[in-house]
Each structure stands twice: as C-alpha cells, then as structure tokens.
Length: 156
Image (cartoon, rainbow, N blue to C red):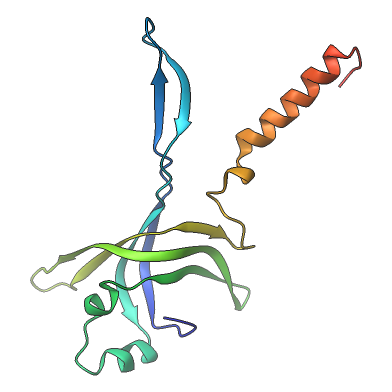
C-alpha cells in the first residue's frame, strides 16, 4: 500500500479481455469487422500472506476487506531472480471486485480477491492495453508499406 509491501499472494491469475465483438452487415452471417470495444483487465490474488507491515497495519482491528472496499491501489507482481525482485506486471488503478473464501474443517482458510484495473504495465512500464503497442497495428503498417512499395514497382 503506497510504497510499503504489506502482503504476498500465493497465486496470481490475470485476464486481459478485449471485449471483441463482430460487427455484421445486412445479408451476411459472417462478420464484416471485428472490433475490440471494451478493454477490462482483471486479476485475482489467492490467499494473501501479510508481511510484518501488513500485520501492524491490520492490528488496529481492521480487516483487509475493509481496506480494499472503496479504495484504489497500484499492485505489482514481482518475481525473485538472482537475488533481486523484478516487476513482471503492474496493475494501475485497481479496485476490488469480489472476495471469496473457502472455510474448510482442518485445513487453511483460502481467500480469493478479484480486482479490476485501469491498465496493465509490463516490467518496463509499457501499457499492455494501449492500441499503439498492438501487434496488429505494427503488422498492418508493415503490410501497408510492402503493398505501397509493390504498387510503385520497387521490391519491398
């Protein structure tokens, strides 16, 4: 929270849905175009393990669910490589969406937290959701340049 590491997750899963929908024209059952209309990155954290800072933060009778409700966070997925932490993904503007708990007998309680994020960044800080970084745009630009070169009678 802020710059303080308050917890670790045992498992992190994420999805990057693009909300792709087919646009259809009259007289054809095939889509005329595919549009990515709604980008909604989401991720889940399974069973937080609190750090000493996290335990101190929650020692005042707070529960983690109460801190997540209504607040926005930036969350990072780190991996430990060669003695140092490296950022794999950063989720920007995260808000808690769901909380689910499994409370079995004679087994650890498992809690799953689901979040929605405004954006997802790679380790270098590049947005995975920005259309300017879209591989199709790069391929399209390359294909357009090759087509233009061919039409001008030069080899690409």
